[in-house]
Image (cartoon, rainbow, N blue to C red; front, side, top):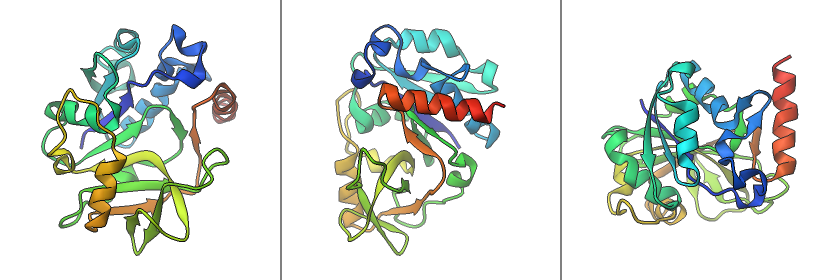
Length: 226
């Protein structure tokens, strides 16, 4: 199975750190943020990885190159300007192939088992499997509900989408490459047809969207490295 790491965002809330360094390359205990994903993906048996980029993207290619330092085989999907999640994935489909693939937000720090995530086979008619997490303080209302293993747009208890999911290429069949497109509308439309499964991860998950949460990620990673 192949994986895609989403790394095209500008990281506005992280300025001025991201004015000259793309957010995926910010240091977290001696390893770039995206490097933690690469390590975990390779450790779980996924070494064919596609990375999209836009803002300061050449720095990402220069730092990671072909991925050999991580034991990975990296291909890049360059975007002139960020295409949003669905647009970025649709543009990268020629590199991802025709089989289901794993997608990971480049700006989260987590202990989610990517190998276990890939075992969530997409059954008949299922277009996506989402990893949900308990709602963090900055996102108390959540994104999606979970009922009998299926993700739903509405429900009494909502969870936050972790930014990690398994997708069938057919989910993006009507999404034009090289055009901005958001993922949430595609997911909600598929949910209405019962085509999205989900599970909840209760372990470590941190949205590294602010300088404060970057420092928290550094502290956690520092403890792990001891």
